[in-house]
Length: 158
Image (tube, rainbow, N blue to C red; front, top):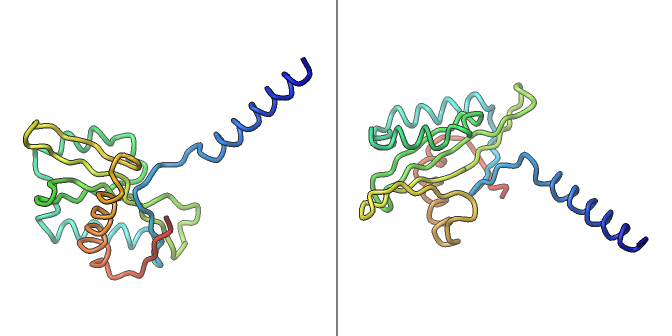
């Protein structure tokens, strides 16, 4: 009986440690640290969308994207539309920081939504739902088309 109780307590303690380490974490495809304030980075991301019509959501995407990802609005996400190779919307968010005066912030590639024309369906992909090859292609697309055009230094942190 005593061994059974000890095993149960060990299991309970282990479960609590695992839950505490993962609680509240948002799975991301890639995370970056930027050497600028959250406000300046956010402004640059918005300006990039406004200055490039190709990144702006088409009407058929707006309803699906905004409603599907409404639970992530605390990130104040930015959506970048890509017409080709593959046709998709990539969601980028700036993670909240405790210090609003900080000159460093964290940006994450959180998800992508792809349109399958054959099935006429939208498919949502987040951490773990793309192959490694597809994840690398998506990360390269974001870095080359978006991040490298912002004018800030950044480094990958995950």
